[in-house]
Amino acid sequence: MRNRTSLDKLKKGEKAVIIDFDSHDIPAKFFELGFIPGTEVEVKHIAPLDGPICLNISANNALIAIRKSEAKVILIDQK
Image 1 (cartoon, rainbow, N blue to C red):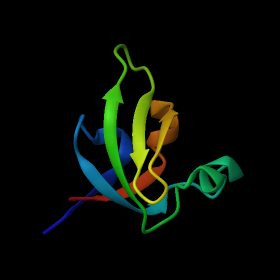
Image 2: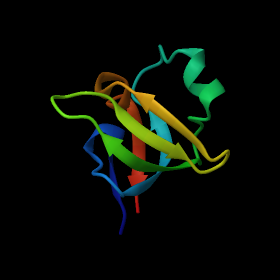
Image 3: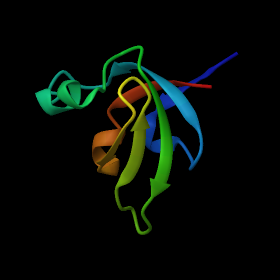
Image 4: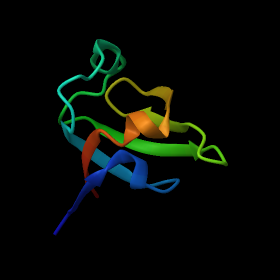
């Protein structure tokens, strides 16, 4: 069984698949950066003190850093 949660709950090295967004006001930049439902992501780094999260988007092998507040609205299916 898989664990459905938000992207901000992942730890370094964990992978997940984006399934949905918890808000209808998602900026277009997320889609442009590759945050599309069905895409696998892996946490590469987590900055201390509630800093940004660095993710590897598997589809285009890009490293993207996003705020924790942004990661909270991205719903994932954890592997």
